[in-house]
Image (cartoon, rainbow, N blue to C red; front, top):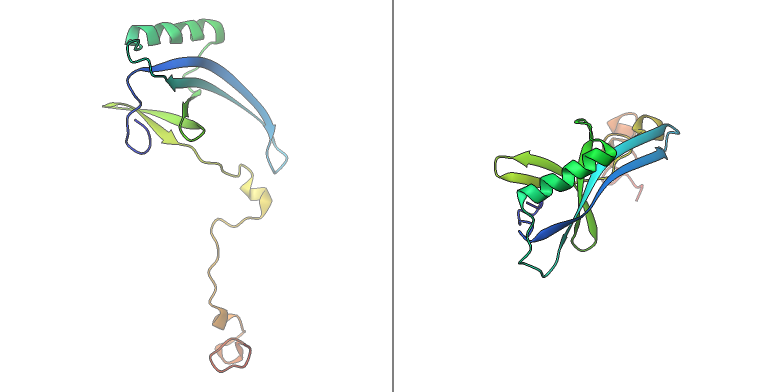
Length: 141
């Protein structure tokens, strides 16, 4: 099931199973490495050739034989929507849920970006309420 609660059509194909090694430097200068299992699913107009659970197991067993799978590795699905979407995968009692992924800063302790934007009342910027510059009738505007 996609994040918008629609189902991936039953006649999807797994067009690619990949082990993606990503080596990168975050904005704080830390070297990082991620290994992710990525399954690319594709929907064609061919509704007569559906993947059976046995065929999916065969694909995954072949993948494991060649690349190895570790239980702690993240599994992502690529699915075509407006563009190729990358989704996290979560199992539930009804099947699998594709979860939206979001970007994030991995070095927030180095960038100086606050956790949340501080809200300030302009009238409270002075030392005391009496010397605040932006009070009604204060003449600052």
